[in-house]
Length: 152
Image (cartoon, rainbow, N blue to C red; front, side, top):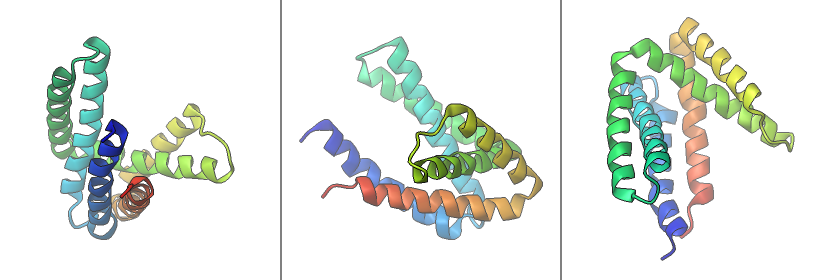
């Protein structure tokens, strides 16, 4: 089994499951969603850091990713307002990326950053509304992306 296929077989159902939770129960389980988002962000950050510092050492990358994920999860739950900002910011990136893709263009990083900051600040100002809306958008995106990439 090739590596990309195995990765899709593992990550696609996980993306769909997290997407369903976020989309339909986002406000009720906001802290859980924040923890999952923090874990995902920390995991990717830890993996990338280890991959650049120790290329070719998958075990080190995995340990670093798990440690980064744990730290990211704890920080997003403990620092609730940072987590709310990041929840809005992630929705901003998704919306901007989808808008550019819909126009047939590749999203420019500056527009993604501006959209992330704007949505993050909006999330802080309108917490309940933004938690509901951003978790619905982010969750539906994860569901669609999971089904799109899942190869059976």
